[in-house]
Image (tube, rainbow, N blue to C red; front, side, top):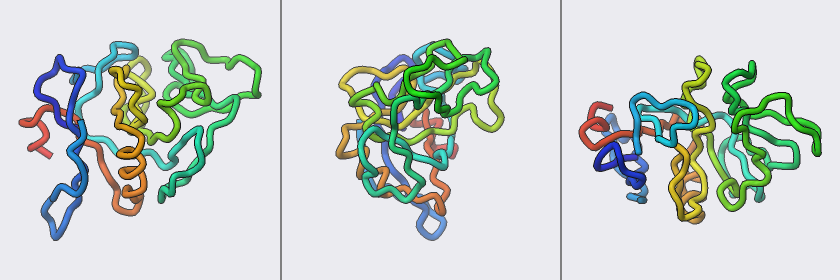
Length: 182
């Protein structure tokens, strides 16, 4: 994802693939970055990150090559920096409040944003409490995200079907000059 400057809420996403050692664009381009992202600051963290091993969504699997978990009542993302489960997917019994608080998300209720989504592995290996959580590649709602990357549903589904875990895809987020470093 490339942005013109740090204080923007709009950036361009291009999917690149290594072909004989050279990276070439294969999809896109599709249209607030921060080097010091923190929980709740509303920015998208810069850097290079992988894609989590499971993709999620409230809708049926769009044909991804990853494990797919269809969201149901009780599926949460723990965004509470005080929680031992911070920045992880958690399921609690439907109709009960989770033990964690903060701005944790009831994933199954977030429509249309979470019709389909992939986890961008920001702050996951290791998890640093307060560093930020729930950075996803999800459906655009027409408004800025709180740090995620979003695309219109058709483009997102195209990208999610194209991604393959055996190719170890990465998401690179930054300005044009920073992205050239990767």
